[in-house]
Image (cartoon, rainbow, N blue to C red; front, side):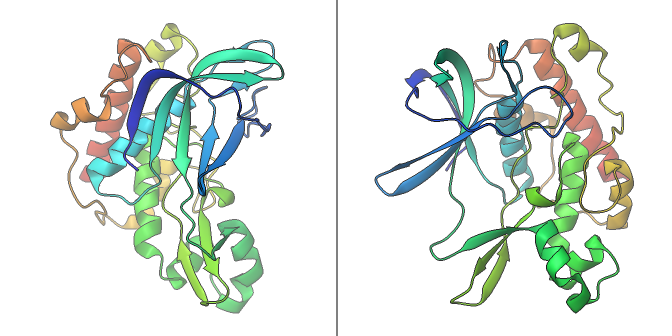
Length: 271
């Protein structure tokens, strides 16, 4: 599935949305839904929704930006489509951009959150901490890449359920899921142009990290200067990353997101 933007409005009023409380401490929710058409399961999610105000966030746009960034850097990840849609929540209709993704589980696989797997197996594996636990599972490349990505995008929400393992009990296999769920990153807490303009793109904000510390910048030290990306990020990649997003978010918003991504990437490269 390629990261694309569907600009023509789609009627998705048939979707039923479940409320997932925001982990950011705000009064909002991140609503999710799914469909199963012709044996193909698709998952949908909305940006931050506040009852009475509607959809007030732009987390879904962040997903498509990070999706494209990871494609540029050569990082395996869950791919999204950004869809212009009419939806219905509690009997009220809204027009918004939402995210759609396909099921990354293979037939016979079940998923388990990394924090749950850690609690169940840390004594057996005799790991010093969560980072050491992942290394002993053979996930050093994956975790180091995740740490670098989370710093570059300012990810605030890499809790233990946002890292998943996929198990097939019959085949006795265990693999890590592709990187996913990057909505609460970039300028996700900015709600107007003034907040976007005043946002410090290099500030090391406290993050909900399962691995390492609550500082994405400090977590880069775990890499010991190791470079993890298959290719470099250049100024020429900007056009691809923000294609078709004009008018969905403002020019100022696009400029500040690019400044954040590129300046943080340069700092990562310099360490």
